Image 1 (cartoon, rainbow, N blue to C red):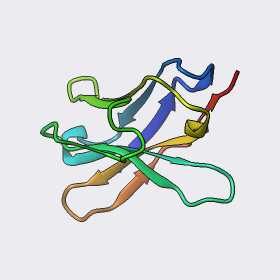
Image 2: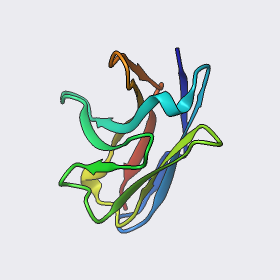
Image 3: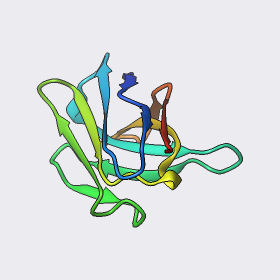
Length: 117
């Protein structure tokens, strides 16, 4: 199984940028579709973006044009570049790894992103 550790969250002003990183270990990284999800208290966890091992991406409508997901298969790391941040982007962001074969999901511990002036 894969272990996922996020980093890069923090406090940023509206309009600012942050880059989240998720380091994977314990399994073959290319066997997983990677993604970022976010959750605010009292709401369901929602998809932000996903990226396949081949580099195909998918984004939630709310972040299209502002966020970019990427992965470095040599470094076993997935990134989320977040630009033009809005207060409504405030959430705990979770890294997700989904096995291509079998579909089992793995989650990181989450990192807080707060967008506020």
